[in-house]
Length: 174
Image 1 (cartoon, rainbow, N blue to C red):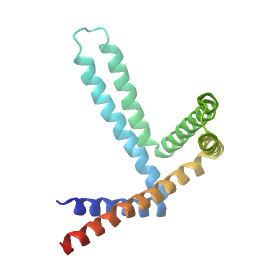
Image 2: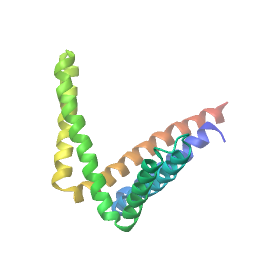
Image 3: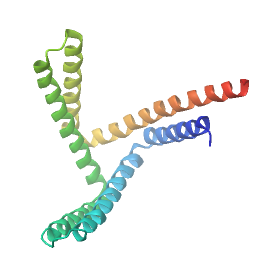
Image 4: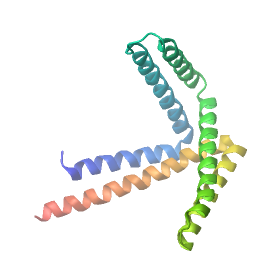
């Protein structure tokens, strides 16, 4: 498969995912919950493998407890995808708040020029604002995150399709 063909297929797939995510954000939220469940089940298997690959028996119980915790998280994610989506949204809010505060705090310590300073401060404040919105309304935040993911996928897909078409034209001209 040529580079232009792989770019084209990747771009088309991203556009389809973007349309689905933006049109049906609830479906996207459910998919995120299922992906988290799959991740938790894979993590559980890896913890069991880690438990029995040790030379000493001491940490086996700890790794097995982590595996059970991962299985429980996966089961909860599948049984209650709505709750899982809300928890993931709050987790993203916590991440955005932490990174935003750190960006603002670290900006003052780095001695950057005014333009860089303003950009870091603005980026940190936007992260903090996102966190506040997600904490206040995590239900709307989850839908908004799905829609933003959809827009990102559309944009990413178009960026993949355009060079593919351009490369095909160049190859056809040669």
